[in-house]
Image (cartoon, rainbow, N blue to C red; front, side):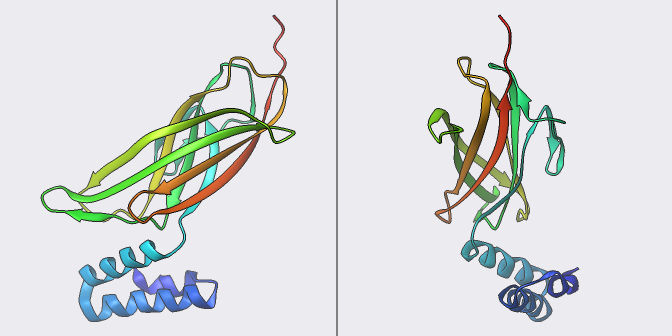
Length: 178
């Protein structure tokens, strides 16, 4: 229920936004509540959270992270991240359209790029206004990578709202005897 929005808001700005969302719902009903919430998502910074390496991703919030982020060269993993505060456009006869693109960069301990990948557009139509979205991308660790500590930086862009979010995750490449 929208009544719990204000109690979940921690900053004064977030509290005011939550109160305004509740007010839109009280005055205009469910349709106005969601329309206002969508507008808030458009102007609020894009947020990415729960970045993880996983062997198995089912749905939003349903993933199993690896016990240890230690991988072998060429090992395949799934990169998982949740995205909030994105824009969706209503398209007649199709529903709400959402569009992202992304890129990851793997950096060694000295900050030098050792690999990168650009994601094709991630687009989706949904009959109802989406409140959540997740990135689910298969990637292989580079074939020629030295053992050591690395950082993966994931950048996601909301193509409709023209805003970006970035998160990082550390991992280790283990030494594999020939």
